[in-house]
Length: 239
Image (cartoon, rainbow, N blue to C red; front, side, top):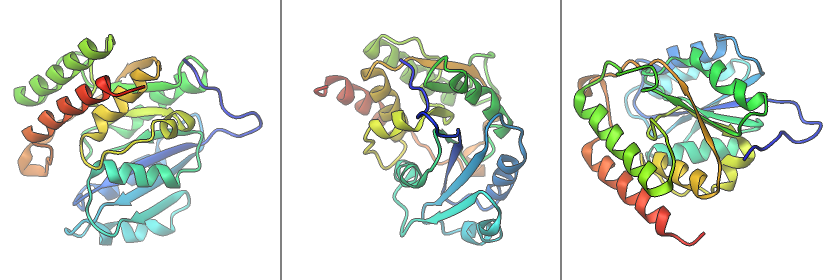
């Protein structure tokens, strides 16, 4: 299923950057997002999800940069809440999600956007596993593969990376999902609802540099259990 842009409306990529306690890296991420070559104009929406480590101070100089919008949540609610807040502020025809931890290279966004602009699909995922085994802890790889396997079994899909941050899609598609999750369970919710609605997800290989927990990695094993629960709940929900 493809979704063309609205007639007469110029294409614009809205990059939503959810941030929680990423003072060391968020500035570099936004700077790269501003400078990379893209086949379409962009806006960058950074949602500071109640950070307490100096992220707000790191973002302050960026607030005056053209095309950059800083949104401050009143308190920390989680990645899903930040994404939903950013989505509500987006003006673009295409939505992309970019983490603020530099595990994924913003320069890969160009290749993710192009199939949508060409009308070949409405949804593109950046897969960290299409190019082979990434340099990541075996526990991270095992958890991702288990959740992706469960997704494929439940929804008849053939994904290689359900949990990827790089989920890029037409804005109309993103908003039609009526997302509800507040935390990391936003990832399986997005995927499950896309597949339930019959959207084909095209995957494109992206580069991935995993960071350890000591460097601020926040996702935990409980989030994997929650992700599996969300996948099953969405599969059993009424259409």
